[in-house]
Amino acid sequence: MLEKTSRVDKITELEQEIQKLREKCEFLEKVIHEVPANVYISNLDEGVVWCNRTNEETLGYTLAEIHEMGGMAYMQAIVHPDDQNIPEDSINHYQHFNGAEFGGLFRARHKEEDQYKWFMGWAKAFSKNTEGEVKELICVDVDMSPRMNTEDQLVQALKENLKQKNRLLVRSLRKREIEILGLICQGCSTKEIAERLFISPNTVSTHRKSIQKKMGTNNVADLVSLGKEAGLG
Image (cartoon, rainbow, N blue to C red; front, top):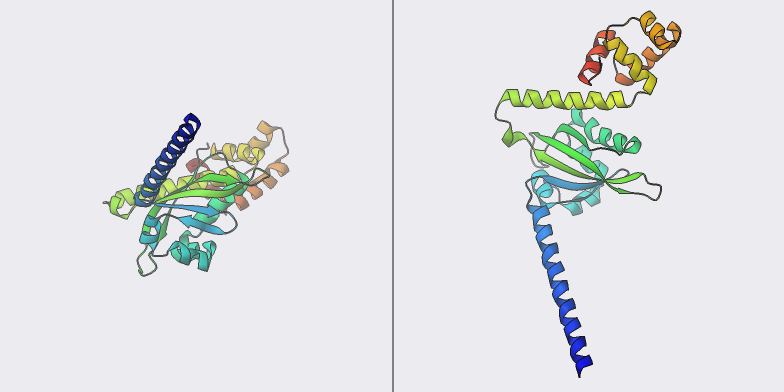
């Protein structure tokens, strides 16, 4: 009799634990779907593979529709043509570096609207493959349009976005290239850089060409500007 009672008690305790877990899951699900931000999981190869309800309502595509059209095609459909580099930069960032969050400011639109809205997005490594490489990102995009009441706020946000992009460009440089760019930003000539680093002027010139190619600049003034915006010099 005691053994039967003990079993009943254990079943009751288990049922109570299951009920608590069910309630917890329901609560967390409500939070993720009600949070005033687009939350989604992006696979580095496939694009968006999951999103919350806010994301569906903000951009007009259900998760089923995103799966049907493909996560990458979906991103191309909603993001402004001039801002397509933002999701691409995010993917490139985590293919080579996974130590920090990635952020960017971009424009996207609802599938039934012509006007684009500004979003501030953040991404963080969410899962990795067996080799330890980032496989999926968890992303959070906040619609900035209702929160930008002045032109000055928008200009400042764009400046911060550009600064972040320049930091990522600098991060793509090799250690020696960063050293040389830092000296260029300080106003050093090719000869002065060669003397400081104990290398030949020809080697400095080769590095400068490589730096300009990676940074996408055609002259020293633009290179110095990008370097200083990234915190060098």
